[in-house]
Length: 182
Ligand SMILES: CC(C)(COP(=O)(O)OP(=O)(O)OC[C@H]1O[C@@H](n2cnc3c(N)ncnc32)[C@H](O)[C@@H]1OP(=O)(O)O)[C@@H](O)C(=O)NCCC(=O)NCCS
View 1 (cartoon, rainbow, N blue to C red):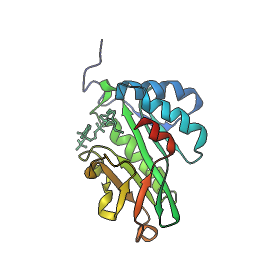
View 2: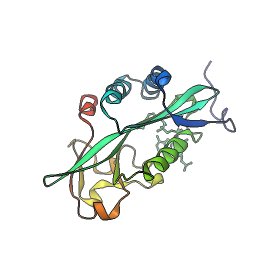
View 3: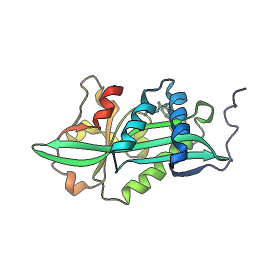
View 4: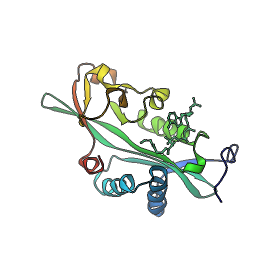
């Protein structure tokens, strides 16, 4: 039996960093939210190679119901590489969606990243969703997506270090592992 929408409002949702015991549940959460296994596979690969990644889970009664993942991203500006973070993916189990869990995952992960000296975060996603959290269309800043077929409004950026980013223009790239998922 599937859970009904609205059933979990008022339930305590814990947001915390992933631990080794969560890897399989994180994969399942992504597989179910996306209806495919691509995202979960890329996460498993990047986890082995990216020491800067951030991976948070949302838990209800010790069960993982949501996940957010950031890996390093870079913008090539002339010959200089500016390193920031790329949000991808965020996933909430279908029966737990539209109850604020995604919002908690984004807000709490942004608090962690903002406390570090990360100059920017990129995200590829729904134009109605990410601007709620302060993301802006990246082309406004002369920052382009590495994939040509992505609609302009779907590629967004959050500038965290205005000074460092003031004259940075160029192509933003996720880690190579994401090429396989595109
Ligand atoms: C996208 C996703 C993570 C959102 O999680 P969620 O827990 O349902 O989101 P929330 O309940 O916190 O919603 C936050 C806000 O975004 C809105 N929203 C939720 N899903 C949305 C969507 N797909 N498109 C546009 N807006 C959306 C909500 O209405 C809410 O708005 P409000 O704050 O003004 O009320 C979830 O729907 C999901 O896992 N989808 C499948 C995987 C996916 O597409 N991931 C994103 C691409 S990486």
